[in-house]
Image (cartoon, rainbow, N blue to C red; front, side, top):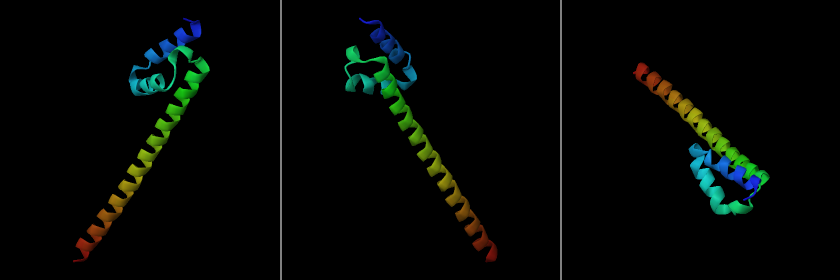
Length: 82
């Protein structure tokens, strides 16, 4: 096995917290032919997707909190006016 392939496999094994990403890379690519550049590109794509999902999650939480706050103020004002 080529040194680059050994390094690529070590990098993948070291990513236990990202096991799903490693599995998807293994399933979609021929690991024996994977270069370090290809591995790095795949990991960057997955990282960008994770970052985008996190941004969307934070945006949703922020808008939900804002809506909840607005509804609470409206309910308070309606109750106070009675």
